Amino acid sequence: MHQAFVALGSNLLDPIQQVKNAMAALANIPHTRVCQVSSLYQTAPVGYEADQISQVPDFINAVVAIETDLTPLDLLDVLLEIENNAGRERPYPNAPRVLDCDLLLYENVILNTAKLTLPHPRMHTRGFVLLPLFEIAPHLSLVNHGKIAELIQSNQFSGVNKLSA
Image (cartoon, rainbow, N blue to C red; front, side, top):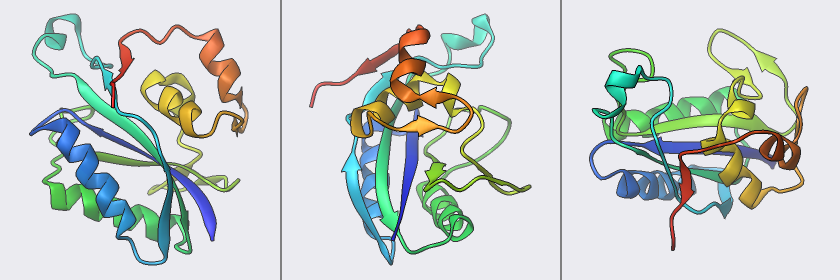
């Protein structure tokens, strides 16, 4: 079994339920088991123009640690299928979404293909990924970026709030 981390996010159609449904879908992947699940985090939209932010609902984010026998590309295909089953559409980059399932890490695999880059290329700059990841894997280090704890300490991640259980 290989350890992997998956980020989940939603800001449409009851985002809390969408993320919980995705967690359940991860638990149903053949040859895979969910090991840990972070809390849910409410996150202000990132990557939008100032005049767009008020029109974009906040996101709900979480990170899930899994063990799987699937290859990274096979796991990515299953994650894309989970997104599609939830009704994910991709009208433009960073569009509001029903569900986003990002493969963040897969063991210590470094991969750069047209379909998948591992580790996830922007995760070290995103509080909505690092904070829930730190919650379930506090001693983890990211290739070329260092320990998650140090990345969190050196950055101000405003707009990311842990939801109470």
